[in-house]
Image (cartoon, rainbow, N blue to C red; front, side, top):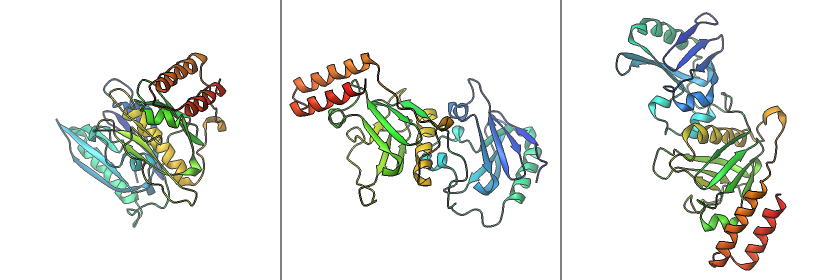
Length: 293
């Protein structure tokens, strides 16, 4: 294929060609999609690519795209076809005058793909985003340390059902998948798909705003560039059958600030006064919050 180290630069990214992979380095700047900036760079093994296309783009551009194999990239699996075209990390947009050069690299890539590699991959071939990761949804702060997912509810956004259930911690071993619905679509959310004691996926617990295993998105809450890498990292850990590697191999359990605990207890008291939680539920949740100091 192309000589090792050859680089093809586009508007928002540059592809560096290696003997067995393509290193995609995303540009930084106000015109670059935020998802690209969050990803930084990604190394795509050639055996994770099913096909390569070169097509006319908009306003005097051409688009070189590597089609990922199904099941090869946790980010694309989590996205499930919901990414806007401009935020597709497998697209390289170039000026039309570079079409001949782009065609050369497209042919080189096609020639390097092994026959039969277009089918579903048996495992993830593209590395998942590194942990720890966190983001703010509309109703909770979500964090993932590589071993467990934690949802901590915001009293201003969480439903009474979620407050009654209390903050949630889900071990990777108890999950069987992730459902991500883009915040750019109607009713966006991140839902964790859970196993029962027998290892079978449990039924979804109603709407996402009532499900303690889900967080919902809103304007400015759970944006794509934060929530999608999060979903991909969780999905990769689940599919690998074990915890993802935390940064430096260390998972840190965050503790609440005293002011946050006091505010949550105050709101819990309001729910109790309104009859939305029982005396027993109030006492239990208050004790749980105090224990986190």
